[in-house]
Length: 151
Ligand code: CA2
Image (cartoon, rainbow, N blue to C red; front, side, top):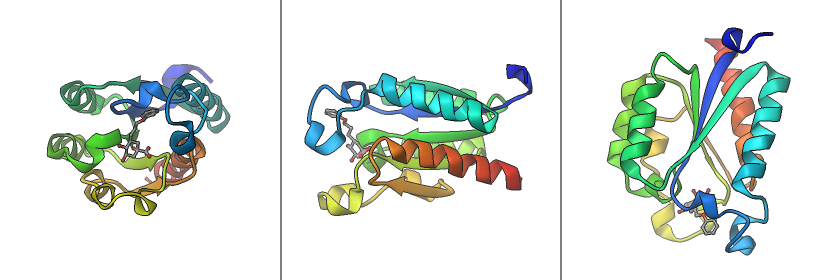
């Protein structure tokens, strides 16, 4: 099937996720962001989706990317990193797109510090998947397909 006929899903990675596999492997594992992106693309091909990925350490860049997603993508998968717990700007941008959003995290937020238990993104997300390491993203992509099949 040609790419233009496929449903497009945008995967957003927030700050510091570019360090994956290089620091703190006891928390975040040894898988690199490039590995995660490659496995998402491969699963996307299997599921008949065109997956695009974007990482930024800058809140405003993530907000702009989310704003531009309206009309271009069918769904968003987002790990906003630490902005999950702080960013009303990202929440507002997600709400403005009107797109279905799946929130993912590598670690189990609820086993960690109290300040990680609150997510601004969760208010706008269809659901949240956390604690499965890199597999959280793959589970999230499968969840996005499930949502799109129902709409
Ligand atoms: O578990 C997740 O996916 C998080 O979104 C990761 C964020 C953290 O602030 C959230 O509370 C939970 C941190 C990403 C930092 O990633 C690093 C990776 C390797 C080394 C250092 C940081």
